[in-house]
Length: 399
Ligand SMILES: Cc1cc2nc3c(=O)[nH]c(=O)nc-3n(C[C@H](O)[C@H](O)[C@H](O)COP(=O)(O)OP(=O)(O)OC[C@H]3O[C@@H](n4cnc5c(N)ncnc54)[C@H](O)[C@@H]3O)c2cc1C
Image 1 (cartoon, protein in one colour):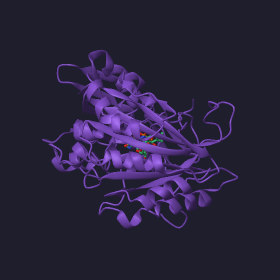
Image 2 (cartoon, protein in one colour; image 1 turned 180 degrees about the vertical axis):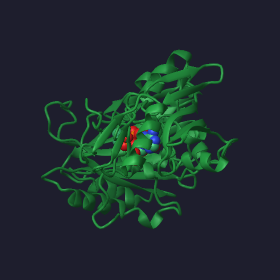
Image 3 (tube, helix red, strand yellow; image 1 turned 60 degrees about the vertical axis):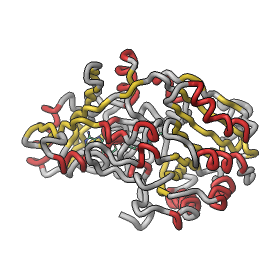
Image 4 (cartoon, helix red, strand yellow; image 1 turned 45 degrees about the vertical axis):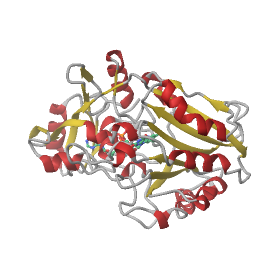
């Protein structure tokens, strides 16, 4: 692996220098060098959220700063800037603890928190940013630890928006949650051939089911047209597939009781909802962990009308994937310590992404994404969208 490897393969860094930092001291030295040589600085972790290439500047790669230490007494983890959520999960699990991570363990700790962090159990836990206790910031002059006490304004900004220009986050301290009673998995329904419009009843059933749910169940749905590839299970090849990812924090009996109406409403082709070991939580959304070129955007909405859901099923074409995450509950409540997370007033987040390549250029992929998102814009909340789910090169004509 080179220092500029990235989950996003549609954008390539071409820096004039790469610093594979092993600690804050390397970052201080790199920033000093960039200052001396007049180089723009970019930071690279996993590249999941990569939107602009570093061309000719100095790229600080944080991959080697991936250490995680857990303090079970304070139920916190200190994660280096290069750690992924999978690293934190692995360190926390032996203590019966779990971090407030999202759908993919390969996502980086830092970049996810800058967007607030919409976790698997966000309706029970609140946003991941709500759990951050301290952020270590490194700049040319040295390293400072920013907390609610030391600098409440910056502490709020970095948790939900990101660090100031020129600052590099070199570590974070994040609160951990108990994993007793954790239940999760997926409900899968094949909607028909990938190139046919599909039947929206299962999506309506999910939306109706979410409306009155208590906070201890969090779910999201995706509509994915699977290609006809031999590596896929035969019943999914070339099919349009709806998947509901579910996480409950109240134990099996309670989660099963809350799930019963949804289980009864649809003839599910697959149901893997069961007690969940946090180390296997990637099975909730079963997202591909293969680097690829993709772009996309999202919209925060205050409700889901039936026509918009019908369009999700009929317009999610062979080159577009739609996801809807249920918010509300703890995600809608004010945090104990102020942050700058968006989406507290929203009921759902709708995100649409599309792969692109030489055959399907980015401009074409963007038109597929916007065709789907446009159906939701009239119901967008005042906050608009979550920065976390903006992917890939910007739309043509935008900065
Ligand atoms: C498959 C997949 C699943 C996802 N699931 C979720 C989910 O469930 N919930 C959710 O909220 N989000 C999710 N996301 C979105 C994800 O949180 C964002 O893409 C996030 O930006 C990724 O952060 P990163 O550090 O992994 O990526 P990177 O692309 O390496 O970093 C993202 C940005 O942060 C900057 N940056 C990274 N580290 C530092 C640092 N130490 N100091 C200063 N700047 C830094 C980078 O320069 C870049 O601009 C998902 C994304 C993907 C691709």
